[in-house]
Length: 173
Ligand SMILES: C[S@@+](CC[C@H](N)C(=O)[O-])C[C@H]1O[C@@H](n2cnc3c(N)ncnc32)[C@H](O)[C@@H]1O
Image (cartoon, rainbow, N blue to C red; front, side, top):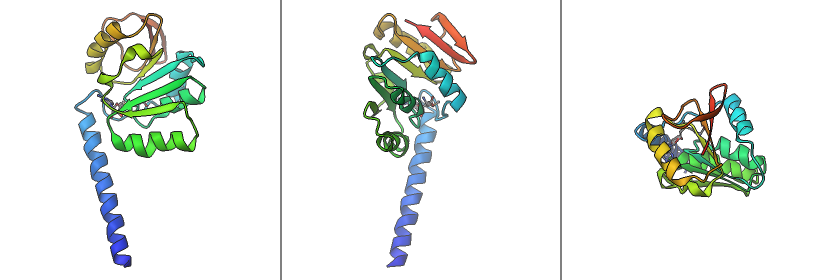
């Protein structure tokens, strides 16, 4: 009986690791691999987001969900993360939102290219430069005037920077 239990645990752990690695590798071929914003950068992004209780905040490629959870903790109306790695979504983001009792935090298992950006006031991103040009077009056609984009590390090719703070770039549509 104990042997069966041990075998099941080993099998589950093995599958978990295989799925985790598969999605981590796959994300290299999408908009960005999983590399969370450092806590210093996350703090700056939240400050520069100038979050208000009426705000709807999106994080495109939410990773472990830290920015969404931080925004939700600040009391925004809704903070939404889009993520294609189901393990990060289930075992980090959703679990943390549940434990932290953050009803205003939502995590969606979907490519962020399908997100309707007209629905958000503040947009957080930490994506590879190769995605920034395509995203710039999506932002121009969908986001409402006055909305903010807060980008960790990488700049858009054409959008005008409103502010820079230690490697965090703020844009206003
Ligand atoms: C550099 S990490 C940033 C995580 C988080 N935004 C942060 O700043 O800590 C990029 C994340 O985007 C996710 N990702 C890449 N392409 C995506 C896509 N098309 N749709 C949704 N998520 C995507 C990856 O799985 C990864 O977790």
